[in-house]
Amino acid sequence: MENMRDRIAVVTGAGSGIGRALALALAGEGCKVVLADIEPEPLARSEQLVAELGVETLAVATDVSDEKSVAALASATVECFGAVHILCNNAGVGGGGLIRNQQLVDWKWVINVNLWGVIHGLHSFLPHLIEADEAHVMSTASVAGLMAVPGIGPYNAAKYGVVAIMETLHLEMEADPDANVGVSVLCPGLVKTNIAQAQRNRPAQLQRERTSDGTKNVAARRRNEAIAAALETGKDPGEVATVVIEAMLARRFWVLSHPELLDDVRHRNESLHRLANPTLLRNFF
Image (cartoon, rainbow, N blue to C red; front, side):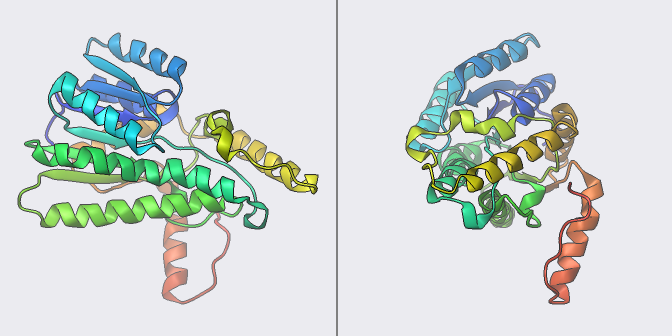
């Protein structure tokens, strides 16, 4: 994609963090931007900020874990603008705790948003992207989709899944003579976002049950607090968005906003090559 002017771009999780930064960056490139988020007030604020850049916008309240909600987002986009050229599957949630202390609702919540959200996005938007003369789809995974980080098992599982899906899609699109769709996967390290406070949007039916062992809940809370503190030292979302735009324009698959983590990725892959047991990351926290 040589330039993005007048292209129709859809961003999920656009109410804050990387999503808002992506929406602003795409607007800066001249895109017409469709913003989607589960939280109405942050979504409205993002829409205002994007509109101030002088581009056409559309905001649609969306729950990416709900296939009908994402289908409605796609319908609203096409009805308003007539096409889709760029999709950023970015919505995500976090959550800490050891696997032995996780409840099934913890797994379901994180995977429903972080993995099924991407699947729903591809299911609803990919036909429109393929119809376009030129298009690009980017999904936000994580460095935790390239190497496991202890204490966030459901998150690791979902992000590994996102990387696998996007790598598969890249190979399929490259082999399809009728499709001109670039594919990218973003694998950031620590970014200054509020993902550690994502519990505020957790559905009632997926809330944790109270247990007799209060230490498990305390440990999970402390883990989330540690993650939140680490995120405060993370990279600015705007810097990440800039790297994503550059990758999409270059039609580059891998988007690593924290190149210093490549040493950890290399170490992990070399360990696999030697059939050595996994070890803790050296540079992530």
